[in-house]
Amino acid sequence: MQEKTFILSVLIQLFIASFSTFLVIGLTSFYDPTAMGDMEIEGTRVAVVGSEDDRLYHLLEENSANTFLYSEFQDAYTDFYERRMDAILIVPDGPPEGEEILNVEVYLPGSEITATLVSMQLKEPLEKFEQEVRGIRTGRLPGYSPIEINIIDRGLNTSSTYFEFIYVALLPLLVFTPAFISGGLIIDFITEEYERKTMELLLASPASLLEIVSGKILMAVAIVPLQSFAWILLLKMNWIRISNPFHILLVVTLTGLILVLLSSIIALNFRDRGVSQLLYSMILIFLFMVSYLFTNSPLNLVTRLSIESIGYLESGIWIFIYSLAVIALYVVMRVTVSKNTITFKR
Figure 1 (tube, rainbow, N blue to C red):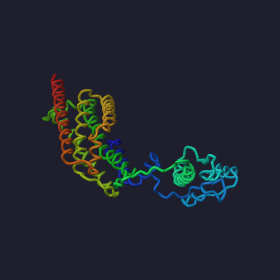
Figure 2 (cartoon, rainbow, N blue to C red; figure 1 turned 30 degrees about the vertical axis):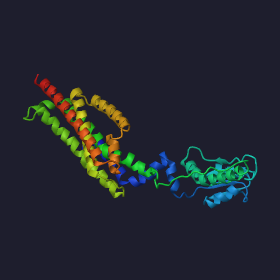
Figure 3 (tube, one colour; figure 1 turned 180 degrees about the vertical axis):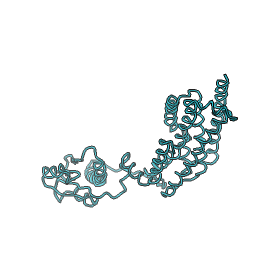
Figure 4 (tube, rainbow, N blue to C red; figure 1 turned 90 degrees about the vertical axis):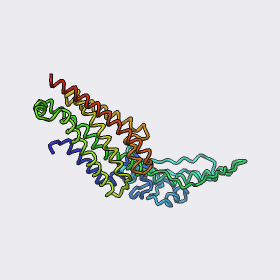
């Protein structure tokens, strides 16, 4: 409880996990507003400059758009400027059967999410209007015949933005954050003993330096699967289906071991909290960026396990590889501890 930074990070993660459903809708609307296209948008007001006989005006009404008809652009612009209207659409003068180019002018508010939402509402009627005009005018071309394309419907659908955000961003972020935090905690556990001159007192006890460091490592790693399990449980309470939870916890624990062992090696070599934390942060950022370049990096492996897109044999091979990395780092840590023990004896 004395680690205020750690407690604050836990509370932030708890908030994210508890309200993940609401956060998914809010965050995806910012980084991909088109994800809101299937939702009913109410309250947007569109000023249409034209007449009731215009085909585009009827298409807007058929699309259930909240339209207001204006005969003069100046009146529509006044209401738009005073925020009584969210957009202005100027209907082209010529008929669809004519030969002149039909220009549809649309005025939207700048730098606002309202502009994106309104443009999404206008997209369907504008596309219908374009198809109708194209169908009428291309039929007059000499020797014109449409190309028939035989598309086989295999029943495959692209994933939704919510699906991508939950399993590619939200889930890995939550379950791996404890591992990232543990890597920073072990640096504090070790360097504070050196900075406060208490390491000599600990070594005066029957415990060896290896036992002291190993105890700190076990303590830092123990919170990783416990906290990750809590986040997975909270996500399931938010009706988010997560497959292979125990395999995910194993991958997260191995990743936590890799980061904690790496951090302990750094702390034992530098014995300075600021330098060690800076170096750990640089390495962590590099590993985080590189992880998305590999198909079965820890982050991607958790995503694939959660949606059952990887077999047990393939996942087992990569878990074995990460286990070898843990063993290798543990050997390096023991060598580093041995060098520090010799230094203390001298």
